[in-house]
Structures are given as C-alpha cells and as structure tokens.
Length: 348
Image (tube, rainbow, N blue to C red; front, side):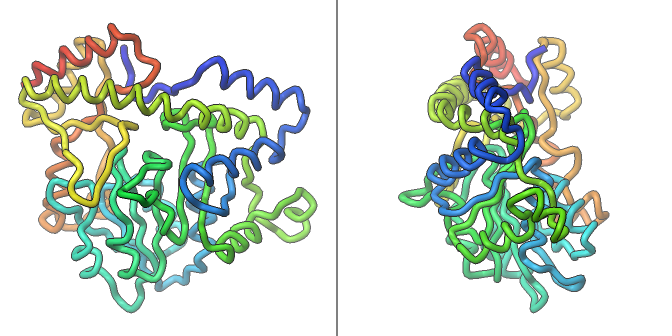
C-alpha cells in the first residue's frame, strides 16, 4: 500500500542523529539552537523556540497571549482539530467561520464580520501547501497567529509567509515536509513575544524546577534530524512539485480536479488534495484496490464537532464532502508516481 503519511527520511538525517547521540547531549542544546537559527532564516523570523511537540507549540502560544475566559479566537472550520481541543481546554470561545468559495482560507470580509470587542486573535492555517498573503488579515485582529507547517519559507511576492504574524507555529510530525519525529516551533519577529515564550518554557532544568515553567523544549536528538531535513528541503520540494505537476496533468483526463491558488495565494506541494464528484467512500475503495491510500484531510470540520448549523458553512461543507489527500513524497520511485498518476486519470 502506498500511504499518504510517509516520512521523507534519508541516510544523511540518521548521520546527524548519530552525531547528536555521540555528543552525549540529548536534552535541548547545540543542535536545537542551530535548528532554530536555520529555520528562522528560512521563514524570515528573528526569534524562535523549538519544542517537543506540535501540541506544545500551540499551547505555549496560547499561554503567551494571556487569554482570559471571555476572550474569543477566530478560526476557520477547515483546520486541525488540535486547535479546537486546546481552546476548549482553556475555556476560550472559538469563533468558527466558513472559508471562502474555492479556497482553503476565509476571506477578509468573513474575518471582519466575526470580530467583536472580545476578539483576541485570529488563527490562520496554511493548509495542504497553500499559502495566503497575511497582510489581508493583519489589521483586522489584535493578534495574528499563523500555522505555516505546510509552507515553511514560502513566498508570496517578495514576502515570506508568516513573517508578519505575531506568532508563527510549525509542527514537525513524521508526516510533515520537515520532520523531527515529533516536535514543533514558535517564531516571531517581535522580541517581546519571544521573551514571553522563553519565560514560559525556561532555559534550564534548574529554572524549570524553581519557577514552575512548562518543560517542553525539543531534545537535541530530534533537533539534529531537523537540521539535516532543512539542508535537503529545497531539493525535496522541487521533487514534490514535479510529482504534483504529473498528478495535475492526469486529473485533466478525469472527473477529478484540484484547487488553483488565487491572487494573493501561493503553493508548495507538501500535500496533494483533490476534489472529486463521486462519493468519497467509492473513491477511497477504488484507490485501495489499486494499493493506494487516499484519506480525508480532517475527520470532521470544526463546525461539525461543536454542532453548529451546516448551512452557515456551505463552502467548508463542500470541500469536506469532496476533498481527499493523495500520496506525494520526494522518496517515491518513478513507478509509484506513474501508478498513482494512472489511477488519477480515471477517477469517476
């Protein structure tokens, strides 16, 4: 079975991990700091902190913006469930909004209509390798939180996606284009925001114990893999783009399609989402018989989880009922790419 969430790991990554092991410094240290430095250069942010999980990255960001129980955070419904989980755990009201038609992002008008005097922040997730100009939203909300897990270093015009955010979040799970096995990071170009993050996490074991900090900094062994992954990232993105373009040519022959970036949007091929007209179960079964896994991007959109009226989320509902992720990976053999492409060309 060719699976969707296959990590892109090379022998060089293992060499960096071995070097970390031989240094006998397994906790946050030299490799973690180098990872933060190189990642910051790539995404255009001066200050960053790498942590042990995606969950921790989101959690310390919410902690840093000093949320109160009555505060509201705007979030599009087509977003990872982990955000909703953390907001509800903190008893913060998520204001869930629809996305724009034929887009993975809410329009500025949709965000503006959701803003109240209790609005604290907007969470903007750059899903599936699609990125949008954050300048469209920056002035609409007090705090802009962007998730650039799928688009690290992506440009829109001359600007890097996420560099304008108050807080910029990334996850490094095994399925992501940068993986450390597990891990996450939070970046900002605002030094004060960075100092708040550091004050939450501490910088040494003694400080964590004495001041009740959140112990979540990334271990050096994980960061070592991240350093290696960054060195090969541009090449891996080029390979994914070439594969994605083969897939797109195949879709022209079938009844499937894929969204095209709009004006003020850009794209990496970190994922390959397709839209289909037939019931998703039929398409999933069709690919399964061919030895190819295709999956829904999210088990449920956020508005369904909290039982909001479906009619208020028509664009999200449409994409939820028609979108599947197809395997795309820079490690694929040519025969795998051609096999997936052949099946994409006959989607019914």
